[in-house]
Length: 102
Length: 216
Image (cartoon, rainbow over all chains, first blue to last red; front, side, top):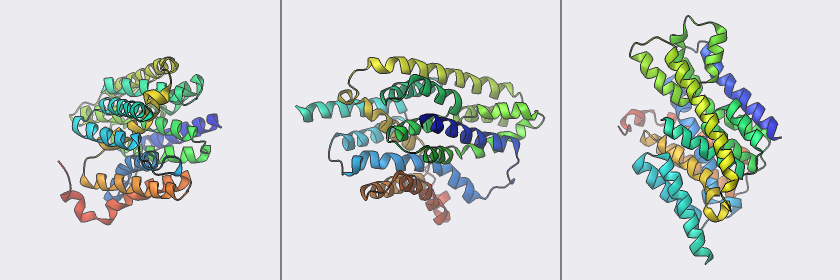
């Protein structure tokens, strides 16, 4: 199961990379198609992260994760630094869980 | 850029190990998939027990953007044999593209620029992944230390760093809210991924706003 996921993901990823290296795309791809492809990765990841923050396990979050998510967005938007955002998010979650559990 | 790649690969190794994947599976991901955001998504979806065809489809959607990058690099590989092109394609990443397209557009034609940088990134990514795998189990009690939140935080950071125009913000918000509403209503991961694939169509609905809304 895990190996099938890894193998199939490796194959599709390589096919995409190889395709345009070997085949000529229509020289002027419609601007709409370019904008769509450009916006696609962030949209897929946003769609995966939204439920993880807002409705983990099917219930609306009230706690630590939502606050930490806001902190991550704020830190990354200001610093443009991935690591700073992740460290801040992890620290805030750990701290809030500690406080709320006490 | 090299520091960021190292840190992200380290984080990937740690997070993947703590999600319960075997070290050999994690190493295989970095060796054969070699795509940052996709590998984090795979860890998340595998942890959630999502079926492999859907995982592959999600990875495909995330990596479709490489079509544009490869198409932009292709003119500089005019005289290169098919075998070498197919080899070069394997190492294509956002970072390798960004570095080499800059050189090529300034008039350099040596493919060594692309090859050296792309392969160096590959070695760095895989080395840092292994270090992350080794470090993973030494970080105790992931939930108490908030380490389980690292994947979510990484995803959010990737989305925020990807914002260049106002329309990007709109697309990300619509994707996240639509997916959350679907998940709340009990829809499967297929619906969530579909929400992500549909949201960028927004940029097509408002073609006039597209250029005016450039932030820079």
